[in-house]
Length: 524
Image (tube, rainbow, N blue to C red):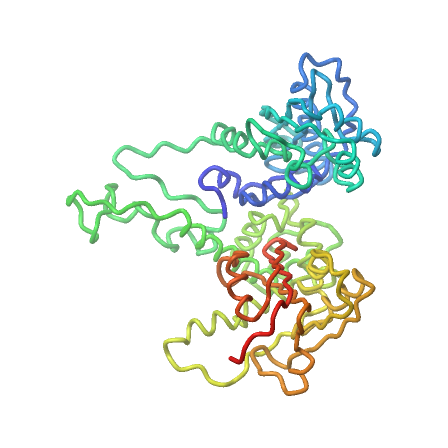
């Protein structure tokens, strides 16, 4: 979900995060920002003593990170991204800057200094807006910093070493992560929590609002309709849907019933609804590009940018429509557009080219072709009763999503108390393989139910029985609505004698629950 209208100001721009930090990536992704990750190669060797205050050091480091990435990307293809975001987080205690520990002893020393005391966490952020003129890169840099004050409890030597040996401190400024195990060290916090995690989202959004102010509505008119990077997919100008308040025949506000002068105006369209419409356009663009093998053709061009006419000739499509599709993919962060033409981004090369080992192109086409039975059932529910025909089971391809998520699922819980596992109806060996790899003591069996929803036979039923003390690992992708809460899972599973629930988010959009059979359920 995009936080409209603030994060939406970058929705149609090529945005790059100049950081490899998974925490910054997660914060910005959760806010709905689309961006590429290009880690900076800037050597963080600035002299700390040369800066009047610790926050100035963090800001300058963030600035250098972002400028290095902007310059490198411009030099590579003569086109810089629209926006590069750089960030640097430091922990300070009494003016002393504590960065990432170099080893476990250094981590222990840092945490010992912080024990029972208040310290400050500064994150410097640089937003670099890029443009090109006569082949030269021009940059406009906006900088800021955020401070959060954190107080640790008095910590015992045993607790500190236990935390150090967890490995968590080693890649974090100050030697702790407040969003994970390190949260148990913190007694109180004053300021932005996400700033301590690694990126001050609130302040970032405020700065975006300053850099990209909303246009003032014209006199006598309502707010202008939101622009959209994919609006041109609806056809030539004038052929798309009419924006709210822009109907032919005058510049007044739209009114209830289509009449004018009644004094009753229609409210603005809900941002969430507009997001859903935009998401539909984005999905259609992705499916169309995959179906036409646009990403494959650009890969076959050996990295040389291709014009819209060249791509149109290869995919046997009209040039104007092809150009609109390519520009839409640029807006989605799937293609790069340079003076010489279009080329794949790293994201498209990794996941949308057919020959890639991580390709999910077949999954995109399958979903786009309407084979998602939930949608089909929803459309037909009021037309005819459901038949006894079983829903088809789609075997997951070698490059499908199961392969990409199974490892996270297998590692989400401690399964050392179990000696055997039976993977049911997955139509793929991906999870079974990862369970066996992650937990060598498990004897793993894959039981492929022939079709989703088909009742198992007597032999299958015997194999599927779970006795007292046995575990159930339930994995669900909440693509058909909001994800279930742990409480909802508990109510559902208690009916079948399961308790001791543990929940985990094994992957973005993927929920996993482990529970234990406590009693045998009565006859149903």
